[in-house]
Amino acid sequence: MTRTLGLISLMLLAVGCATNASVRQEIEPLNNRLSEVERRTAATEAKVSQLDGKAAADTADVKALRAEVAESRAAAQKAQQAAEEARAAAAQAEASAAKAAKAFELRQLKGRQ
Image: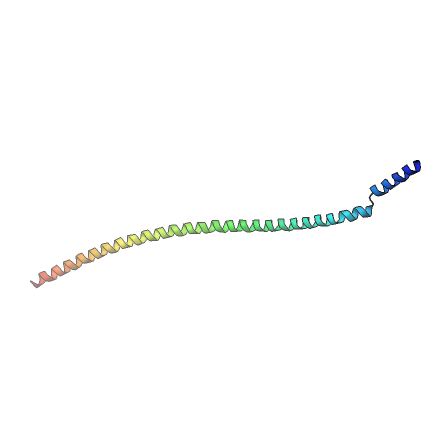
């Protein structure tokens, strides 16, 4: 009986104990997967960092364009105001020219009489 008990104990120890080689064999695929995940994570972080830089540059470009648009609008408003003032001056000049032409005609008529 002691012999049987010893034999059973030896079998349990042999089956229950893992060798270094078997542990390596089981862990190596997990290490490979983990290494691949770490590589992909590093690549993704690099891409995200690159996109953050591009986004910051694009944001600066948009701000600059907005400032240029605001300046262009202000210049357009000034040009519109100048055009309106020029139209008013032209209308006044036409009215003055019409008066002068009328006065000239009247003098011509008076001179003939």
